[in-house]
Length: 346
Image 1 (cartoon, rainbow, N blue to C red):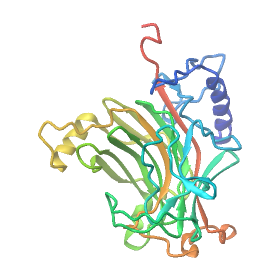
Image 2: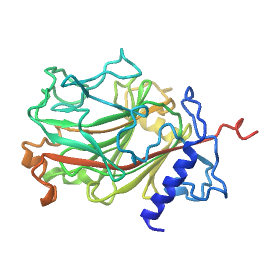
Image 3: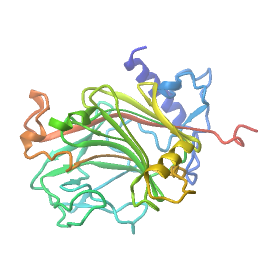
Image 4: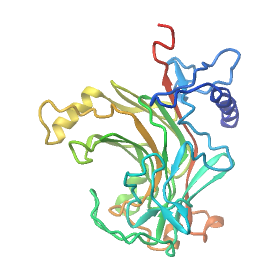
């Protein structure tokens, strides 16, 4: 089956499942309608096409990006413009401080578009942007002003706990990270921060998968588990599928449908106790709370900063240079979960 056929089949399944009822108050809401012989167009994780895991599509969090505009009931667009200025106010948490991005880049609510079923998050050379004058020392890295570069950030508004998380995407081919990660109460779960263009001694970065579980309660954001592995291709060269199966016992990480790496809860705890200054009874597997998904681009100054529009677009095809824009392209974000035993009549 070609990918085009798979995508068409998948979209039919999404339509079917999207009609099922969800419990909005629950962080683990899933569609009530199971795929059946009457609905052979069911879409499942690439690594589990026959659905041996009993996965049910989460209609509240997943997105195929096939509309004309972003679904703002599903996504918080960070830095959306009001009266000519970007506003950093969360629609569900109005008193919460909203991160503006990693300086020198700043999140702009104008830096995204939908084209032919693909979400494109834009990194722009935009010196005339109304940048924040705020300068503060970040937890990681040097204090820098916001200037020249704008990026995009979308945050899912519905939390969920455990499941199978999958994204098909292609990283931006420039000195910026294309990130797919998440935040929960006191924790950060980074699925990847794919660096698009490693140069010189940092050449390895554009094919290095870096994923982490970070503890913001006891380690001030340092990883309680992290791993870096050569993935075997440049993130920015083509679309690939990244899948994360996550539960209370650990994580399995899949690339293009094949298991690539992972960690058990016990091994994550052993890593933390061996690599962090923590008590002997410290539980390093902190990814046990509901999370909200993040899609964004960030500048990592310690890896390199585009110095000009031409530098930003250095790797862009000749026909796409000159507009000062480089895209992180996302075909879909899908989340499946398992029905509670009570729903199955057990």
